[in-house]
Figure 1 (cartoon, helix red, strand yellow):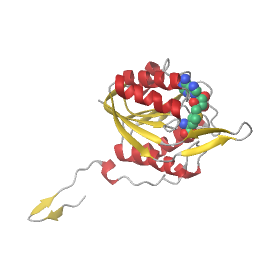
Figure 2 (figure 1 turned 45 degrees about the vertical axis):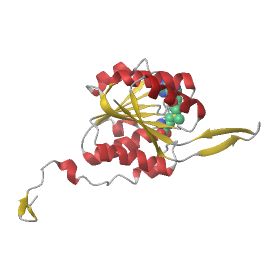
Figure 3 (figure 1 turned 60 degrees about the horizontal axis):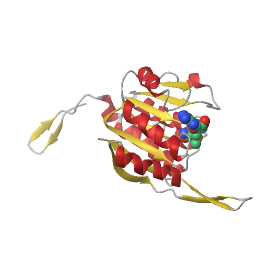
Figure 4 (figure 1 turned 90 degrees about the vertical axis):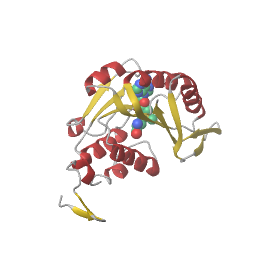
Length: 211
Ligand SMILES: C[S@@+](CC[C@H](N)C(=O)[O-])C[C@H]1O[C@@H](n2cnc3c(N)ncnc32)[C@H](O)[C@@H]1O
């Protein structure tokens, strides 16, 4: 980069290519088969693109849309790896197309998280938690994540308005050394299971940070 003039000084910018990365694959975030609302997709892409994490973990893959959003942001940065864990993933695309920087582990969180960390080559600095939404499983995921994340790592929890997930996150903040950064996406989805007319709340992304 040519130097620029700042006041009386000439400023030569860092050569780090991530400073000049462009969000060329952002449209991917809106076209893939992800179980996320548009605002949540934009948040996920933007957080990865802005933070430029070296090692990302995704818990819960299903059709692989979240994996592809994270992969798109890492590819735009030309930096970082993703390891995704799901016992029964159903990607509707050929995983080989993202295998340059994404690894799929077929197995359960938290049991497979140490193996995921080995596959990533170190502790994670970004995590997307979107697995089993029962309170017990989500609590176990967050316990496991605490073992494989570096201090300062960001953890995004999807469907954080779902009451069992909310309770698990609240407990993790009290007990496990997570800083609560609050809701990063207020996509509250007050829906219902129609036939029994049972209200069920989903949506929202809550952000935690490892202390
Ligand atoms: C809501 S879907 C994930 C959606 C995906 N993250 C996306 O952005 O489209 C939940 C997934 O979690 C998986 N799952 C359930 N229990 C799990 C566990 N213990 N560890 C990892 N994944 C789990 C399910 O198999 C399912 O595919």
